[in-house]
Image 1 (cartoon, one colour):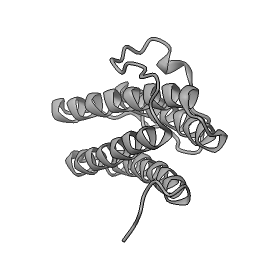
Image 2 (spheres, rainbow, N blue to C red):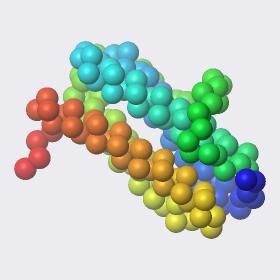
Image 3 (cartoon, helix red, strand yellow):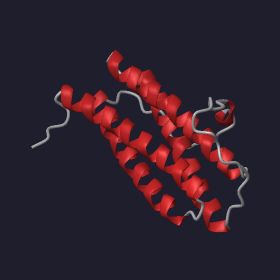
Image 4 (tube, rainbow, N blue to C red):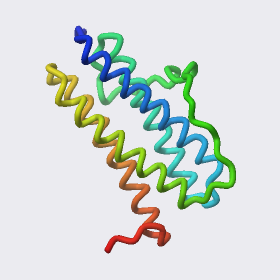
Amino acid sequence: MQITLSQKERMLLEDQKSHEQICIEKYSNYANQAQENQLKQICKANEQAERNHLDTINQLLSGNIPQMNQKQNQNATQNMNTTVAAVSNISDKDMCSDLLMTEKYVSGTYDTTIFEFRDTQVRDVLNHIQKEEQKHGEAIFQYMESKGMYNVQ
């Protein structure tokens, strides 16, 4: 189904696109730097999901509402230009804290974006992505808690 985006909707999607690109870069960098294999796997899985989110946003920007059950195209990220620098000698705890903070922020920006869209189908697509962002944060939180990196009082 084709959609026509307002200028505001397009700008909000461009913001979400840049957030997804940064998430991809962070998860990729941290997967390579993580000391524990479990954290590497969490980063790799979340990176792949973020690539799918980026593809979905690109489809919306091109005026198409994607089918949420279809395989996402991974080629959309090959030419991305992000400014996240690789940080060496960062602890797994610091990586997790950064990723959790990033997921909290990105989830919140999706909330705002969802409320600004008039098309219910687009809202549903964005809500699906937001729920996945929350699951990414949950996986990081659970990892941190299990390793004594996050103490819930």
